[in-house]
Picture 1 (cartoon, rainbow over the protein chains, first blue to last red):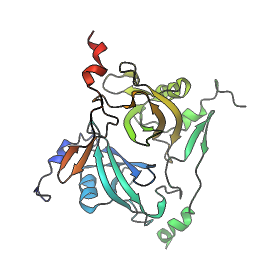
Picture 2: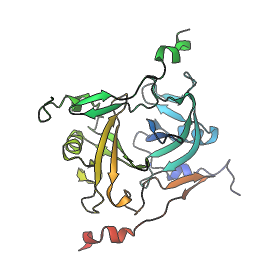
Picture 3: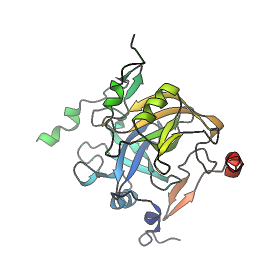
Length: 137
Length: 137
């Protein structure tokens, strides 16, 4: 049996970028939809694995971001995958609330190129004001 | 009707990184598998749309990379999507040859975290030496 509490070799395998970050893709384990892409540092990836939920590094806020901490739209982790270059992660997740995007859509990738325009192709499932209303309390 | 040859507003909508690049995810339109992540500059994205195939910017070689130019494993473009922050692209593609990874696997994300180890979870479909044999001619 491996000692889960000790070895961090798997974190050393990852080729962290010059800023200490790598892109992390959250993909819905049920719909297979790519939900969002965010960034992880070493701590975010370690916590994602140990807490079993999507935890990222917010570049804009420069701090750890436990996805769902405000919206409740937590990402329950089912599987972590690493690519051949060891510099991109996929999280296979169950997306609580059925939406990952702050706009109230299932996926952040709701714009499709048609002709010369990015057109909105996916519906808003919930009003963002409703999702984040407790932020304004 | 829009004039496809003129407007490049859609390229200006994209928030290119400080290095002029954004991550681009290739996802298989049939299996929904995330095949790979590479990088695009403005020219790569414009050519991807105009030529209808996955074209990236190779950071290691510092030049355009027409996916499949050596392997024959071209990515036929079906759809381009942009995320809410306008800084990540998804290409929905038909992956010719059924493999995107230079290791001869369907997807570059063939390693899964189990316990403390990244374990190889996907089979090699074709020997890389066979895929790239004409490189050595």
